Length: 186
Image (tube, rainbow, N blue to C red; front, top):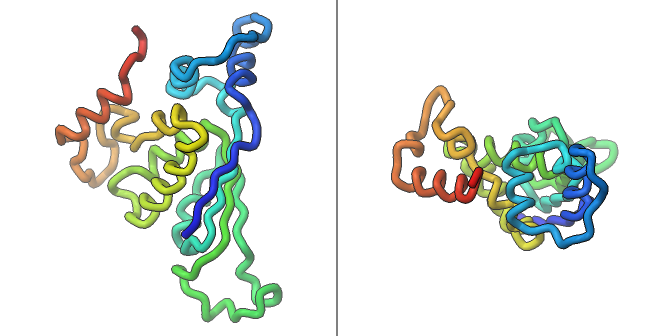
């Protein structure tokens, strides 16, 4: 599977200016710090919904792509067709694990939200692996956003799953939670 991530729109300056608008200020002209952007991502205020990325998965198993397609808000999904009249392949012979081309266009808020479910240890292991690979590519473009992409237990501070993996009871969880919350509200 090959994954590429492209920043489509919404510079840090634009996002910061949207935030300034919400408090009645004009746009700024200074460089926007990573620390400021991290706070915007963590508080999930509306301006981050104007920063968009394309995530392209080549040869992703169809069933894994469908896990991502369950996410609806702030994201659009595009799959290569399974139609027999377009591909010449009998649809009834296709398996759930057959590779497809899949792209999503998602805003920063959607990426944070998807991460909460797809980084969870209770998620399908191949889906977790694919999402981690996508985040590795996004990290090359926006490491600040990726630092805010955590499993739901870290986001909430405890596990909400019906059948927990018990990660929230480990030392590793405590370390990850501390790192996630670092420098907030100081």
